[in-house]
Image (cartoon, rainbow, N blue to C red; front, side, top):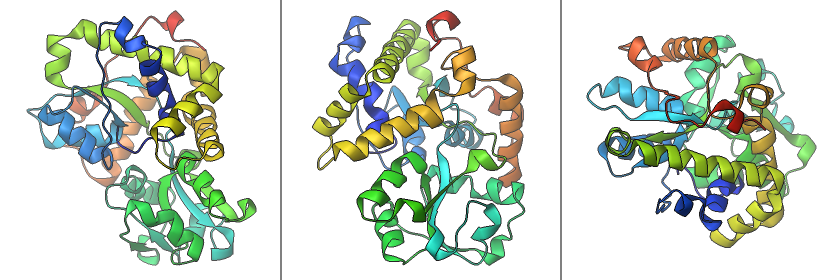
Length: 307
């Protein structure tokens, strides 16, 4: 897991708690790390058999390491959660041009910040007029709440509830979702190591079936998922985790495309456009290889993935 245990991870916890992994003959243990880049690096090295992380980080990793071939096998965030989160009282409005002249917190390993070069080009933002301050993950919300930054990069579903819990008025918070401003990229996916996929293809299929069951259960009964998150995460607040989970399900997971075509796959034309957008920030050495980052070979049948 590329981030700490929060509401959006509830489907994985449910799959474990209800024995869905065990029913597939799998013994699954979760570990959390600090960001997608660490996740995909450890996946590529074989430290993990599977990961849940940003597919764009995986594309970049594969491009930089042509001898390694981990792949995304289930797209969970059809709509990415990448956002710039700011405050109206600090001059940030729901339009990209408002970021010029502002100071933004930019955690070095953050998936949303990694898309800043693409987002700024798509929206013709003068990067020279935006001050970026490298800050740690834990201080993003506190620094915005105290006025030390005007905004920061992150996942809207994670940060909005945190800011409200810190007393920031809801009507003062702006969540500028990059997907609303031209970004065609996908978000977090289940991905597997080259060794695991080659040695245990049936286990990969079973892993995806179990995760899908977990997502389906949480969509039907979010409260059960929230309780597991609160049980696992120290100092977790049920109201905060509930809002995080519901935002993630509604905005990132169960999109109109997913409701029509089923969860887990990609739309080929959009995938090609996403690869082209990534190359705007930094040219890819091999676009054909980049397009092969995702495979649907292990997914359940479409009728089993509909919601």
